[in-house]
Image (cartoon, rainbow, N blue to C red):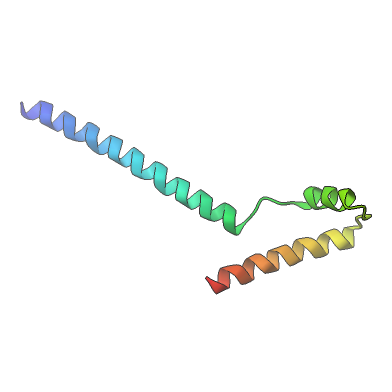
Length: 78
């Protein structure tokens, strides 16, 4: 009977660890994507073209740096 109890507790601990790991990883990824949205230069270029602006490298780099600056300021205020 002791062997059966030991196997049950090991399986229970494994399932509990998997569930806790899943939810912790999920919470971490949600927080990461809130702080660092996955926008890159090609998306900015496409956005500017759709608004009728001609995207130059200078404008694109300026927008990327502004977005990074806003993200840093947002993180400092938390």
